Length: 394
Ligand code: RFL
Ligand code: PHB
Image 1 (cartoon, rainbow, N blue to C red):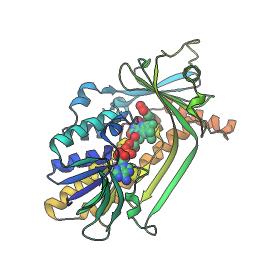
Image 2: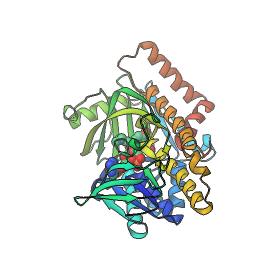
Image 3: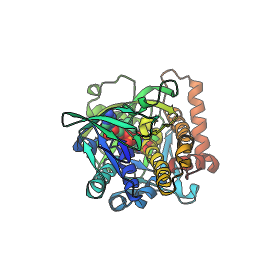
Image 4: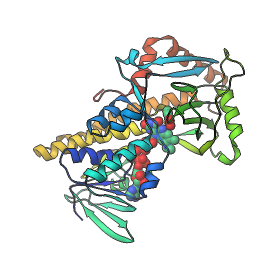
C-alpha cells in the first residue's frame, strides 16, 4: 500500500488531520487498531475550546455540533462554601466554550471520512513505524490477520499515549518530561439532568469535585479519589453522598444533587507528560502520542486539535509550494502551545485538588489563589484566556 500521509490512530487527532488533509487535496490512510464501535463509545473529553469549535466548523464538521452542542459562557469555581462565576466572553473579548462530547466529535469525523475521505481502516494495528530518516517512511501493521506495509511520504503518529509511533524517534534524540499526581478521578455518567447550567469546579476540605454534563439530560461527574482506588468500593449512593458533601454551599444547607441511574463508572489516573521533539525526519507526532495533561483544565482534546491544525497547514504548504519550512518548525510551534497548556492544566489541578501530603499552609495558599481569581478581573482573565483557548500564535 502507498499513500501520501500515513496516519496512525483514528482518535480525534488522526481523524481531524485526515479531514483537513482531504480538504487540502492531500491523500491519506488512517490505521486504527480498535473497531468503530469502541472508538465511538470511548468516554473522554467534554469541552471544546473556541479555536477547536472554529476549526471543526471550517473543516465542514460542525453542523451537528452547532445543533446539539451547548454553548457555555463561563464556569463556577466553588470553594470555602461559596460559588464564584468566571464570565468568559466578558473577560476574553467574546470567547466561549462548547459542551460537545469527544464521542460525538469522533462520530461526526468518522462519518465524514467514510463518506468523502480516504481509507480509514478499523482493526488495523500499527506494529512499528520505520524509515523516519528516509524519503519513504512506512508503517508495518496487521489487518484482518495479515501483516502489511503502508509506505508514505510522511507518517503522522496520532496513536495516543500508549501508541508505537513515538518509538520512531530514536532514544538518543527523544526526551520525555513527566509528572504524576498523588490522586485520581472517579468519573461517572448518570441519567440525571445537570443541576447547574455551567460546569462547577469545587475545592473542598474533602477533595476536588467537578460537575460537568453531556447534554441537558445526562450528567458527567468526577470526584478526586486516592490512586489505586477500586470503583467497586464506590457504590452509587456513596458517590452521590460524597458529591453532595463536596459541592455543599453555606447558603443552601441540606441541598442535594439530583440523582439518577449511573450508566458508567471508572477511575482515571492523572499524569502530565511531554515528549520532545514532535518530529523526527518524516515522522511527526500529534495529540496524546506526544503529550498528555491531567483533565482538570479540559485541554487534552483541544491540544490534539491544535497540533493537527498546525500540521495540516504545514503539509498543505509543502504540497502547494514544495517548501518544508512549516514542517521544519512544526515541533517548535506546537510545543509552545503544548507547554502553555501543560502549565495551565498543572495549575488547575494543583490549585483545586488536595494533595494527601499537603499542610494547612498549602491549603491556605490554594484558597488565597482562588480568592484572588474570584476578586480580580486580571487574575480571572488569565484563567478565562487559557480555558477558552489561546489564539494561534498566542
Ligand atoms: P486518542 O484519543 O487516545 O486516540 C489514539 C487512537 O490511536 C489508536 N491506537 C492505534 N491505532 C493503530 N495502531 C496502534 N498501534 C495504535 N495504538 C493506539 C487508539 O485506539 C486511539 O483510537 O488520542 P488523540 O487523538 O491524540 O486525542 C486525545 C484525546 O483523546 C485526549 O487528549 C482527551 O480525551 C483528554 N481529555 C480531555 N480533553 C479535553 O480537551 N477536554 C476534556 O474535557 C477532557 N476530558 C480527557 C477528559 C481524557 C480523559 N481520559 C479518559 C484520559 C476526560 C477524561 C476522563
Ligand atoms: C468532562 O465533561 O468530561 C470534563 C469537563 C471539564 C474538565 C474535564 C472533563 O475539566
